[in-house]
Image (cartoon, rainbow, N blue to C red; front, top):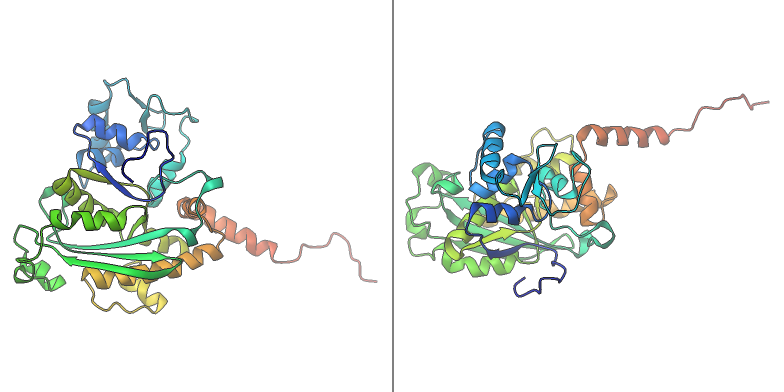
Length: 328
């Protein structure tokens, strides 16, 4: 991922690069892949976990409105002024990917890699809390490598969060301060993490949570930011298993008959998520999504349209009524 020439095609998969030093530079980097809505853009640029739409729109206008490099589209999305023109208000591939829980970085459809050829890095982190940008830190990280639907390698590491672990977190994860006090800090394992993420699709169950924590730790430890395609298995389950009432990791793995060997521990959850991903990729291929671009389209298609399409397929399975009686 490093050292590519400016004109070279960007390799498919995640990467970690030096983080822009100003908010406008961060915005420019985020918008390089295509337009984004104000909430998504300001959350990423300002590192805010929760942000209301009206507040995000005011922040975006204040931050970007005076810069000629940025433009606000009629749809309310922000884009680079020099970006290729699109139909005003029409979602681009990058927007559709953002809405669906995947991230842009996808090649054009004609060159989109086959799902069976893609490396997936299934990530799970245990943390001291839920606020990545407000002081909470990673206590354990696991990355399960998936290729052709199979788990081929698992990396797992306890991490010294350099801050106390609340008792309720220890009760949930069974990770105590005594377990992590002599473990490496994240900055000491950052290179190992980047090595396993580079060139792979970042996958997690509720991917936004794990992405934020890993990104924040890389920013703090290396001055780098995480970028590239990502996939949320919660959203994938919503599309591929519509009859499932709840989509927690417990419910999804139970549906597939997958046992979680150590719940609320990074390795146990990552491996179980990876196995569920393999099963869901098979379902996706059965539904006609054999490439990354096709998977993005499947995940980003509104539920109502998916229902209509399924209904049309069922109707076409029945013989059409005859206009005349041909029985003698």
